[in-house]
Length: 120
Image 1: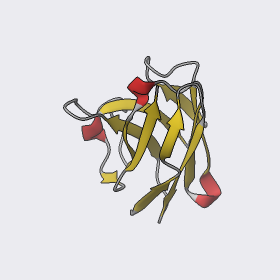
Image 2 (image 1 turned 135 degrees about the horizontal axis):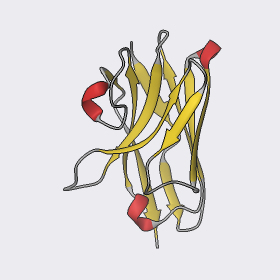
Image 3 (image 1 turned 180 degrees about the vertical axis):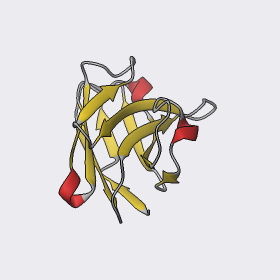
């Protein structure tokens, strides 16, 4: 499965951005991770198409929301009340097997990433 994310850019603190990610084929779980310079890749959110279950990381709860269209194999990440510490490269990922979806190793397919920069 190939993934292509879009929607990154520069935004002021307090602003919003919406990321999109389209998969070339069907998936079981799609998620978003982010990685800031010098930091480990961090879980942001994921959606399970079966039952349409969603989850978000603690650092973005209440500000970010994941949604998607399973028929289009497309997932969205709505990011509100952005903070400078949200600055990172955001990666879309797809998992095909069960596991701990907060861990990057559970996801077997990755997109190239899209940069989100939040200015103070």
